[in-house]
Each structure stands twice: as structure tokens, then as C-alpha cells.
Image (cartoon, rainbow, N blue to C red):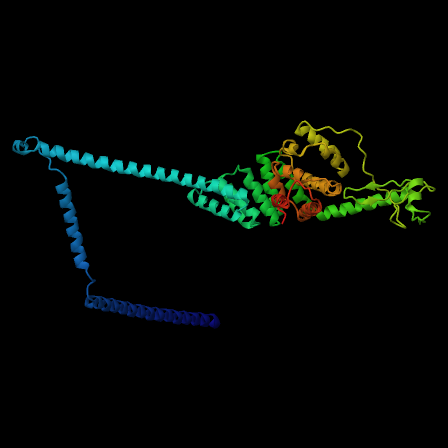
Length: 472
């Protein structure tokens, strides 16, 4: 029993000690808080004493007095402005009331209101007149720029269109025309910006999409250019320029794939030909003279569109036909130019001309025979708006390879083609190789004119014609 009692006493002592420690801590905390409160109170008193010693804010009293005086003056003015109302029972004041002065005062107020209305009306009229003047200025600058563009002064035309845009910044045609002049100068990024601003004003303007597409194609932004030409087709279905440009862009994008596919198809054709008719290398011996060969065995020849001769082989083992200039050649099958099976007639309409062209466009020889029966002055009526870069270059090739070697003049034909609709647009989209063909044609024309003495046209005429074809 001694041990439990001892333990209880020991616990009681420990509890008393802990309670005393807690009370001691509580007292010390209270003392600290009291000291802090005293310090804060002293600080407040010191700050208040310092504020009393500071001078007053500048002009505070004067400002307040001025405000009060202003309030009073405004009240007095209002009281003066308001006419004093006379009570109905104040007969003496009614006797003193001057009716003429009251009527003059009312008339003066009405006059002031009328003058204010007239001033606002004049301001509105002046604004309308200024707007009409600015529109007339923009129209004048647009017409002037169009005239300069036709002459070929593109820089001056751009300045005129710019001044027109400053006068009327919401005219979409001015932006589109300036973009066309910028395209002529090959400033494609600026042309793209003008086209986008034009589209922002008028989203149904097909020419703006078309010109922006050409600018983006020149900047090699082919996907954006395709989107622009597709927008043109949405607005104007069947637009030939947009269709042609889309084909060109798709051909550029799929050029590598097309090359691979063509190579594979060519390999397959060659392999089939080898299986069906194996090629043989045949040595050719010269026997007798050229006259004997030509008299005994006439040599068939065929010409490609570019005028180069091509050898023709037969499947017989005994009979072989070859070209004269070569000694040993590899014999292969080449398709010959189809001979004309019908007599051509002068087309009576553009539809008949288009159908005839589709039939014979594969052969330069047939085109040469067909163009001989058509007078050059009929070209604008027959082509109308169907002229494109492919047709133009095929005709140039015919002139270069058939007309010039046969000493035939092509100046009338070229002049008539330059009068066809869309001629300038087609020139704009020609490639560098196609431009070289046109340059070669004009070189041959100048050489033939130097040789001929009785030419109908002079060298100056040819140079002017060359400038219309952008030949340098």
C-alpha cells in the first residue's frame, strides 16, 4: 500500500508545479501587452503634437472661400436670369409690367434658336459637299491612273491611285487597280496588301481574289493562292483564268509526284515494248550515191512539232528504212504526224473555231494548214475571251517553225493577236521559257526583214509590236 500512495502524492506535486508555471507565463504575457498598449498611446500623442506644429495646406482657406463665392454668384445669376413671377393678386406690379419688352425678349430667344439651327444645317451641308468633292477627286485620279496604266507608266499610275485612295479610302476599285500596277512592276508583297484591303471593303470582288492569287503564287505561297482562285470560282463559276492558274499551281505542287509517276509509266511502256517487239541495232552500209538511194527506195520521214526529223522503223527483217544523215542509229517506233483527212473551212463562229482547235491542236502541221485559211483580222472575233497561254505559245511555235522558214510574214497575225481580249493578262502569266520562244520569233522576224528589201513593215513597226509582247 505504500507504493501507490507515494505515486499519488508525486503526481499531485507535479500537477501543482505545472499549474504554477502556467500562471507565471500568463502574468508575464499580460505585462508585455500592457507595455505595448502604453507605447502605442504615447506614439499617437506624439504624432498629434507633430501635426499641430505643421503649417496649413496652401490656399485651402482661399479655395473654400472662392468655392462658396462662386456658388453664391451662380445662384444670383440664376435668380437674375429667371424672370420674377408676378402673382395674380399683385395689381400694382401688373400695372408696371411692360409687355413690349417681354415680347422683344421672347423674339430674341427665338432668333437665337433659329440661328443655331441654321448653323447646324450649314455644317451638315458643308460636310456633304466636301464628301462629294472628295469622291470626284478620287474618280478623277482613278481615270488618270487608268490612262497611265494603258500607256505603260505604272509608277505614275500607282501615285494617282494612291492619291485617289487618300481622297476616298473606301473605294475598292482603287486598291484593285493599284494592285494590278504593282503586279506589273513585280512588287508582289505590296500588291497582296492592296488586294486584302480591297477584299475587306468588298468581299464579292472577284478580281481582287484573282490578283492576290497571282501575287501569292509569285511569292511561292501556293496554298493561299489556290484558296484565292477557288474563291474566284465561287463568285464567277467557269472563270478560265482561275481554272488555268489552279492547274499551274497544282502542277507545281505535284511536280515531284508527277515526275515519279511518268517515269514509272515510261518504264512500264518500255518493258512492254521490249516484250512485244525487241529493239535491234542494225548497221547501215552506204551503197551507191544519194540519188540512187532516193530513186530506188524513197525514205519516209516525219517531223515533230519542233521541226526535227525522226527515223521510222518497220517490223520486217528484210526491209529497213533509215535517215540519210546518220550512219548507225537505234531504231524505235515514233508516232507520225497524222495527215489531214478533211478539208478545212473558215470558221463562222467562235464555237466552230474552238471545236476545230481541239481536233488539231496536237499537231503543228495541221495548225499551220488551218491558220493559212483564216484571215488575221478575224482573230479577235474567233478567240473572243478564250485566249490562254497554251494557245498563244502554240501559234507562236507555228509562226516560228512554219511561217518564217517559208518566207511568210507574221506581223499582221501578231498585230491581230495583240487586239484579242485578255491578251495582256495572258502575257502577264507567261513563264520564262515561253517568253524565250517569243523573243526568238521576233529575232527571226528582224533578221528576215534585214534580208528582204521590199518589206511592207519597217523595223520601227516591229519594235513597237515587240514592246506590246514585252520583248526587250
